[in-house]
Image 1 (cartoon, rainbow, N blue to C red):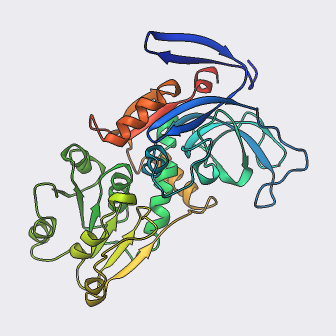
Image 2 (cartoon, helix red, strand yellow):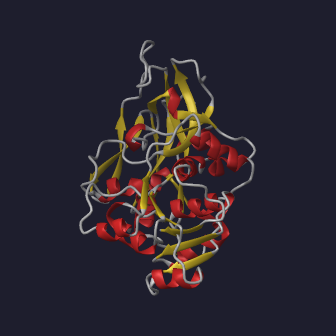
Image 3 (cartoon, rainbow, N blue to C red):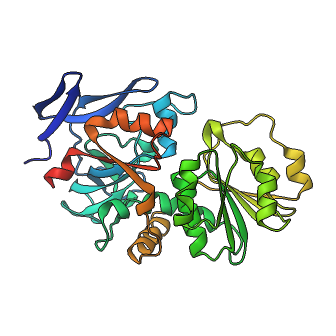
Length: 351
């Protein structure tokens, strides 16, 4: 079967209909919370084209992918980012189908990260430097977690030595859970997972948290002091971001002269930040964006291949691409204990 001809399924209110399609399918967010798959031309490489780095380019075909919290602003139609055809997906493993560069060859299996999260399409052109090899001794859906884990490792490298530190992780979604696991590997003494959802906190101990706090029912500052015998955490990680960001809570939780890592992507501006408390507590703030493809994602893949982190507890749901609408709705609404949602592209079953 050629790369430009696939089997695809459309589901309607009467059941499942089967169609044979010979064009590329991409996502189109037609309204807030409403996603459709539309046809588009197949990507074509120019023999002389080069990516943003001056290197060659590849045509990448996603097969196993997953949703991330940073995909949700596009889906829900927030004003944070301009919405384009192909939004939003960026955590993916698949196959190089063509290249004009030297790094890869057709048929190579790679983890790839599209620019600006424009990855919800069956094939697309990508700079060859935005892909890394995948580990072959673990399931591919586990290797897929090297993308989000790589972003966590990049962020944690900015902090002082984590050995023997006490850390609170505000937000126990997919990234908060991976933060727990990475912190455990890096020698943190206490890792306190904080979230509004009990269902997420039930996963946290299996991902490395030593204690949990549901701040829907409990004052998290008082609870943290109780856990830490009167002290507050040395480090607080904001792993919520976007419209629900919890920077003020992080300031409250952080001890005098402690550190806050702002990992969750914040809104462009935040009103009523408790800046005086931040200053008077002499808190250091670290931020993080854009991991290094030559170091951070390969390191995360190495950790997974070595068995340092078990990602099984956070992979909670799977959907075929035909059900991408339902996948996003479940993820948005945080129902059914959802943490990480795998989305399988049709090419996975034709590989």
